[in-house]
Image 1: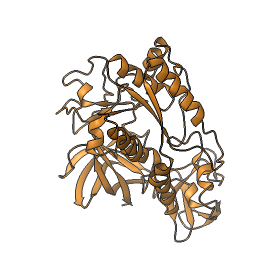
Image 2: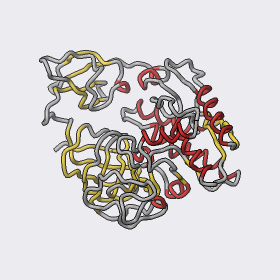
Image 3: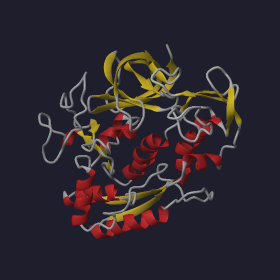
Image 4: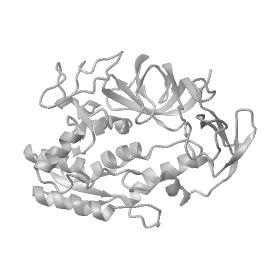
Length: 379
């Protein structure tokens, strides 16, 4: 229970269904570093506890600050320092919610971890209809699969609300984690969820959704990084190597970024975009964004650290690959290379594929797993 409306209603639905439920708040961060930004952990604990009291269930604050630093913050900082783009929200799910917290729960005899993610389990998804008992699919099942093929009770499927679907953030989960995961609100649209929370009189019914780093709070990534990684200014150059300005540190920029680069566009309605980082020269490469901008669009890449939510991906196949959150999944040919690596060739060019980012792999609406982008080929 994070103190938000999603996990609050998820808890209420489980209680109403007759499950033996205990609420847990993961205390990962208390802003003891004085980081700029709002870190509302005390307010969130108060709200989560109030909902638990209303529902008549036990509530625990589970202190996981040490584990969070070692498993998520360390990964985040080392990633940015090495020039790649990590995703702490994805790793928080694998390492914390369904990792350390699950260890805590198992020791106390619990059988599952339920969260407020917008995702669905195969056990609650219809085998032959798009709607049953309130469940829906997003309707994004393009080739090669279909959403209703070979339904598996432990499989994870996209949430009904295509605007809120969060399966991308579950892509690096392990099969055992997928087995014990429950997503009680995955069949709901966000307005419906708030309506149900209001009907139940939950304190969090109209609480604003949080935005920020997983379980840290409303902190801008740039502000967070600057408390741990020193600025390392260097040149901003164009594709020909001409110096156009100065950057503050390569770790503060993301490939595909348009805003905040600090170099004025040469012409009206044209925008510079970050297309490459050159750590050996401490250079940030930018270019005018066009449909054919070099280093911005690519089809071929290599994946590493492949993780699956079910059976291993052992054979070549065509699947849907989502390169980042809020980005459509594109059809791609997946060819295993062994040792957790694979070649991925998109059928259509993709914008700003980024080393270190997570690529979520799907068969239609079914989440197969995920991997890290290792390298990108521009040909």
